[in-house]
Amino acid sequence: MTDYEEPESSDSLREFGEIVQCFRERAAMSRPELAGRVGYSTHTISSVEQGRRFPPPDFPAQADEVLDAFGTIERAARHLSRNPGLANWFRRWAKLEREAITLYTYECRIIPGLLQTEAYMRAVFENQLPTLADARIEAQVAARTDRQQMLRERQETEFSFIVEESLFRRQTGGPEVTRELLDEVLKLTDLRNVTLQVMPLVQWKHAGLDGPIRLLETPESKWYAYCEGQRGGLLVCDEKEISVLQRRYARMRSQALTSTDTVGLLKQLRGEL
Image (tube, rainbow, N blue to C red; front, top):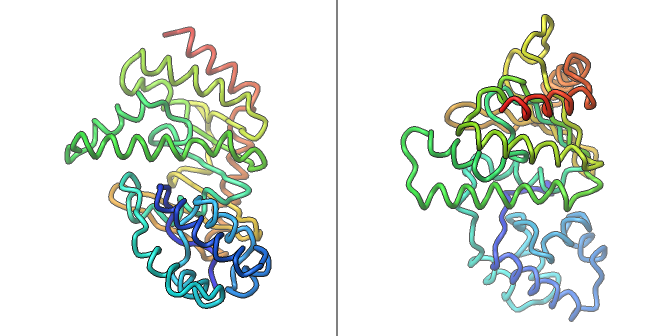
């Protein structure tokens, strides 16, 4: 049975979590005990009760039966709201992302979402075609900003980024947006759980020429990959495919600038603006 489903973040999730916790405590049952009865990990139960994740599809019915909740949990689940700022095809990855203990990202198109400033986000969204409505842009900015909290809240999660130098030199949004972006990225490199490496413009050997790579490891030591294109994304679960991407990412780590040299380059770029 999987421990993962689409991610959400809303008041309704927190209210749902409080209902589950209330009935669990009424039944004098601990989180580990409930986890064993419904077939999910203690971490999942904790995340649901704290409103940090969307419950798996069969969880409401199972929890309702185990906790003798008179159908209350099932009814509450029908009113859970979904985050409008995340594309449907991205939601499951975003949920896995929030619970991961390791996250690797290689990007060659735009600065990774977790590292973007709000001004950079808006520049990206405003350049999309077909044109996005203002409300849609605001929803996407809010969703991406919420995702970024992981970098500081999940201090035991290892975040590794490899980003092409050209993305910083492109000046998406203009010089002022780029200056702010560089300042923010330099601050993030001070976090102990964040490693950033820039892939230099001139690199004769490059293991990532096939495109962006995202990899993550769950608390259960299960690895997933995510591949994104122009009009959608693909969650990769096949171990052989994931192994190939892991090998490519490992090779790129040796081909990119070191963390120290990366900071030096970013400071140089900042000074040139």
